[in-house]
Image (spheres, rainbow, N blue to C red):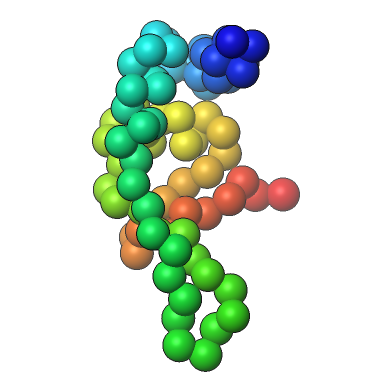
Length: 76
């Protein structure tokens, strides 16, 4: 229960007012695959095109999806 409240607070801090039920329902439908390019040893996580809510949640946590569908982590 505590982690749900933390997600809700993080979204509110990012200026996105959504209910935790809506967030969790939408995030359950975010699908991805791991792929490895020829000659590489590191897999890339590729996402389907995120919905509006999914994009908001990812950006609130510092993530983004690039043009080729690869999930990019937060800048350090």
